[in-house]
Image (tube, rainbow, N blue to C red):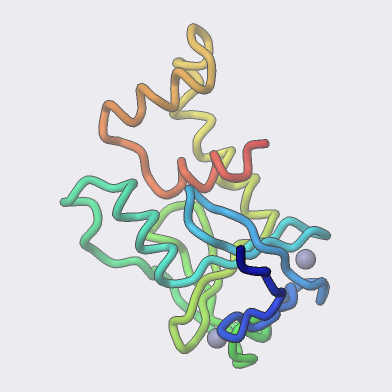
Length: 157
Ligand SMILES: [Zn+2]
Ligand SMILES: [Zn+2]
């Protein structure tokens, strides 16, 4: 039996860009992420985001522009400390921030509401007759599960 230590040489401790709270390890669609326990903002590495997309999108949906309307922000990246950029994710009504070195992405908790609003219209009909879980599986079968759905699922506790 080996004794586990708390040493994590490759993992840097990161703080929330909104309130400076130490981020805690979490999961987004099975991929490792970091979440702020205070404001529920979340950090996804570039690797994790792409892994989520690979599981979420049809092949023809994966390709294409990710960043629409990208512009600078005054927020310091929790990973490298440089100023982050902000953009509309794949043209959806979802704004996320990105590390200028492409290390990862930040999702504010407020964006969660935008996601839910965007999904409400689409799922309203389904929700009348089936549960959210059933709708989720139906969406999967239909091949229309997007990263938005997965992130919404992640936040939808
Ligand atoms: Zn926070
Ligand atoms: Zn960075």
